[in-house]
Length: 420
Image 1: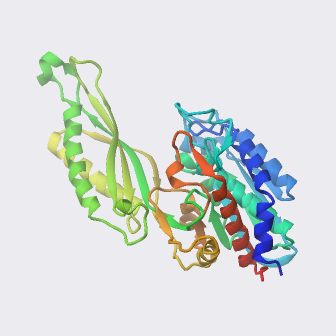
Image 2: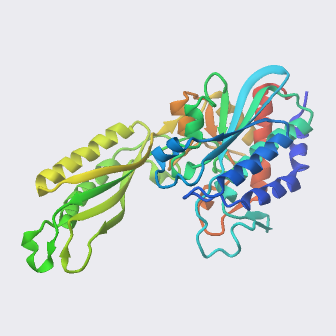
């Protein structure tokens, strides 16, 4: 039997290789939106998987499917990657999955966000924490197992997907829809998103993003009586949203959402646009909203509540309101005592004196596996730091990557029953 020490040593022996891989990976500018260089990212990952002996499949999403989700971005192809490795002995089917799209880097970085730098025990670059380091950890975890002499039992699948930052429907969502991840081929799933190496994540709150447009009629400002001011109609709706927000704050969850201030439902107006000139009464006003759902709520019930507020505003103002949905994600959670959760917790405690599972304040692709594929044995675990997601000078500590890789490798060995 292979020991945990054998596995840890194999990971430590690969630290330089992990960093070299991650620097090359971070240099690929897979920004989303709009979905830039996905083909380059996919080819890089497919080559790495092929070199490791995985059976590799590159999955290009049909343009008509892309058009349903992102009609203005069909000129950017959506490309996902899967690699599968099967052992000679029977055992569980274990699936690691992570996204390789990153949010736009923006400005004010101390160095080029796509020329990664290793300094002071950290690696800097866009996607370092969110979440290319998670993909690196799962890939090298299996490398370490093989180097330590583990004969794989069952199978290991690595999927690397796109578009998580804009909903995931043409990434992991598409793979689930097409049956690449299902109860028939997956016993345990680990989504390698950034929650640091010290804890597992059991799920996430849900979200409903939408636009509301208030309609009126245009007139000259000196004859406002001839028009109907869409801004004032929207003002009525915003007042209703303000009262609705207070109602939502009373809806809480006992699940360990982090930070604790996020353990309630919420809604925010995040953008507003109206007007043509200072002397024109506007005939339309559009506002954008971000509605957060706690587990126990559903997207359908949230839609119904918004529709009720719109009906009330229409009745009060006499103006029409248009609802346009941007994206949605149902809340997701799995039990803390699921097998994969217990296994990872036990191995985390080899490196930390204590650990507490969390639930994410925002949504991620875990919902496709749990809600859509119906696989409850699915947790989130990765080395990235949540507070580093989407920030300037994003980084991940090297020690975090090494520790998470050890936990992933040891947990995989335990799930396969090959450690002593």
